[in-house]
Image (tube, rainbow, N blue to C red; front, side, top):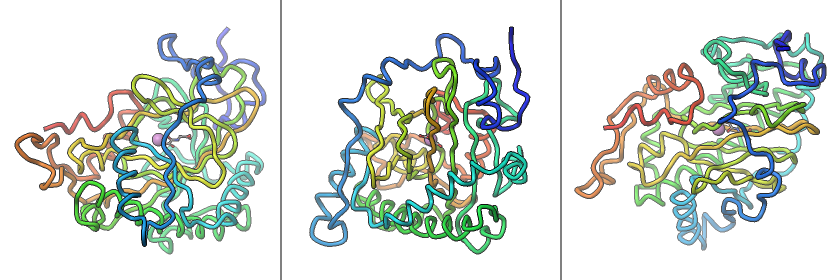
Length: 346
Ligand code: OGA
Ligand code: NI
């Protein structure tokens, strides 16, 4: 018997079902391998200590970043300068938001992906055929004063706690973007300038426990369309990163952030750095939350390979495009293993 979803949000459906409704079930060839998820703990993505980035250790840290971006497209950072209490408040208020009554959460609900503040579910409910076991609150975060007034007012400390976290994410993003620029042999401010008047968006992802996690995804394999992503995950594992054909599980480490290269840096780097496929699995016991900050170009920024990274041995791999054009394609085609960046190949 097939069951169809009767609630807008998966958080409100999850606890009422003991099977995954049919619209969440992936085809047999496209399901997570949970045995591998549980046993594959030995290796993970590199951890980079940012202590001393602005003083004595800069060249060594930049070298580590270059290696991680080339070999993994992902790394974790420690000693990143974001105070623990800022992170704790962000995690706490996010959980409080998703613990609100259904009617209260639904005040923020929208299926219109052009809205700058909205709660939704899955990925793009308007275009996708298979749903994902995820709800998400998406916020624009820069310039803060333009967007805070749209954010939820419940929980009462939401605006204050999320604004403080956003300011810290902006600072960390700038530091990382400069370091990544240098690691490519570009001027420190090259990427910053290439992004134009950058944007900063955030998602608060909520993955409720799932009765049959072997049949569905929280998020299926995708690459991020933006420049870089800074991800905070709670203590429940679920993120996997593709490395040499294997899915590496990124186990949560306290006080770290997970950084990944998005499609725009792949393009600017002329393929020296790769925007790597990753996905989120769900589990039957615990709710999982993750909070990605997406650092992105201005919609009218024109993105293309950096001229100094183009030469006889490295011809330009991409045509130039506006980020607006790219982003519209990304949302409308749905998440897919053929990464969006291939549509802009030279
Ligand atoms: C994303 C993402 C991974 C996670 O939101 O783009 O990849 O662990 N999330 O939730
Ligand atoms: Ni992602």
